[in-house]
Length: 281
Length: 339
Image (cartoon, rainbow over all chains, first blue to last red; front, side, top):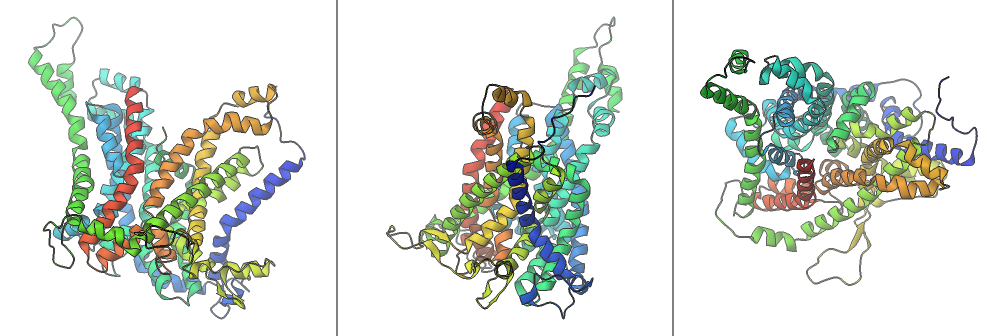
C-alpha cells in the first residue's frame, strides 16, 4: 500500500484565484517574448508600429535575418570570449574551492571572505586601473583582454560555488585516500574530480550565462566594433536605429537565444548556480 | 613524485618512526602545496580587486581631468564637487528610489509566486520555468525590449503598452518614459538640495523591467526556503486549529527570514550598482530622471575623460555597496568559524 500525497481538492474558489494569479503573472513574464517573436516573424512591409501586437500574416524571418547580419561578427566575438573564459574560470574555481573546503589553513576562511568581496564590488571602482593595465599589457581592446578580465573577476563566484560543493563531500573519503597514500593532487584526481561533474556543469552554466550577458566590461574594454561582444552591439542598435524597432526586437531575441537555450535545456543546474550564488549553504 | 614522498613519510606500524626531519619536511610540503595552488588566484584578487580599488582611490583625490594623467593630490575637492552637483544628487535620489521599489516589488512578488507554487498546483514546473526565465537574459536584452514597450507614442497613435491597453479596452495612457517629472516634487527642501524630492516618473518603467527580470530569482529562493520547512511543523499547527493564514504568519514567514536576508543582499547590491539595464532602456534620461552613479561614472570617465571625477563617483558607489555587503560578509565569516 503506497502512501500518496493528498490530492488537491477538486474545486474550491481559492483554487480559481490561485490559478488566475499564476496565469496573469505568466502572461506578464511572457509578454516581451511574445512581442519579440511576432515582430521577428513579420515581413518588412508588415512592420507597422500601430499594429505591433497583431499576429504576423505568415512565417517570415526577414527581421531575424536583418538582425543577424548586423550582429553576426559580435556574436562570434562573444563565443570566442565566453568559451575560454568559462573553461579557465571553472578550472581555477575548482582548485580554489578544493583548497578552501578541504585543505584549510590558518586564516583560510578570512581569505575566502576577502575573495568573496570581489564579486560584490561595482566594477566601476576598478575600471580605470583595469583599462590602464590592459593597455600596458597590450591586451586593451582585444578578446584576450576580455577573457583575462572575466576570468579574474569570475574567481570569487566560481570559488564560492565549488567550495560549497566540495564541502558536502565527506572528509572520510579524503582520509581514506590519504591512508592509501594519496597526497594533495592524488586526492584531487582520484576523489574530488570524479565527484565534480555536477559542480563543473553548474559553474560552467553560471559563468557562460553571466559572461555572455555582461555589458560594462565589453563596453569599456573594447574600442572597435570589430572586437565588441554581442551585448554591446545590441545596445548600439537599440541606441541608434530608432525606427528599426523590429530589428531591435529580433536582435534582442538572438542575443538572448544561447543563454535561453541553456536555461531551457539545463534549467536545473542553472537554478543550483543561482542559489549557490545567493550565498546559501 | 608526491606519491613517493608520502610513501616515505607514512608511519608504519611496528617500524620505528623515521627521523623527525624527513617527517616535518613532508608536513611542511603538505601544508604548502595547497597554499601554492591558490596563490595565483590570491595574487589576481589582491591586484585586480584590492590594488585597483586603492589605485582608483588615488585617482579620485587627484587632479586628473583630461587625457594626460595627473596624479598630484587635490584633496577631497572632487567629492565636494559631486555633493553639490545636480546630476549626482539626482543619481543618489534615483538609486534610493530604484532600490526601495525594486526590492519591495521583487521580494513581495517572489514570495507570492513561491507560496502559490508551493500550494500543490498543477503545472508547477511549467510556471516555475516561465517565472524564472528572465534571469537567463542579459539586462541589455531586457532594457531593449522594455524601452519599446514603454515608448508612449502620441495620444491618437499609441505604441507599445499603450497600444496594448487600448486594444484590450483599458483607458490607460502612460508617458512615464518621456517626462522628467518627479512625483510629488515641490514643497520645502534644504538649501543644499538641488533636485526635487520624490519618485521620478521615468523611473517606473525601469523599476518594472528590473522586477520583471529579477522577481523570478526571489521566487526561486523563497521556493527553496519553503521546501526546506518540514511539513510536520505546519501540519502540527493545523491540527492545533491554526488557520492557513496563521500558519503562514507565525510559522512559515518567520522561518523564511534568512531567505529574505540573502535576497536583500543579492538584489540590494545589484540595484545599488545598476548600470546595464538603465543604460540600455533610458540612457539615464530624460534630463537625468533615471540617471544613476554607474552611468555618471562611465560617461564622465570614458566619454569626457574626467578621470578624477569619475573615480570619485566609483568610490562612492563602492562605499554604498560596502555598507550593505561588508557587515554581511563579516557576520557570515563569524558564524562559519563558530560552526
